Image 1 (cartoon, one colour):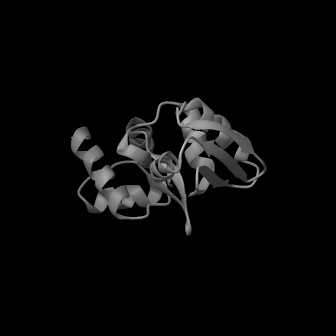
Image 2 (cartoon, rainbow, N blue to C red; image 1 turned 45 degrees about the vertical axis):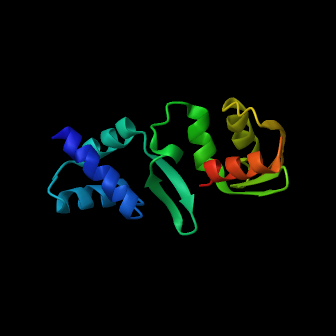
Length: 144
């Protein structure tokens, strides 16, 4: 039953913007999984779901690549990141106000070999990347 419920949660968060645990509980109940909000909270942790920023607010989602995130730095990265773009061999990561240093630290912890270095301000991180192609690939990978 738990495995089926986890699969249902993944399908729900991939198809709808779920902003709260209460919304997820209601969606699960409608899908035939009537459970308590505390169980939903536990399931969210077990699945490694994150809250990601969107234009309309924060929603539950799987991390990039669809894998559970165990590293707390990566959680900070996803929570603080707003957008990623590149020009030539430089990437610009926009963050929530005051989060650039934390996002840059998390990025450093990810140890991407193509990133030569980064500089953080208040809400922007600039990264120098080895090549334009590497910057494009990393931008796609890191896109929120």
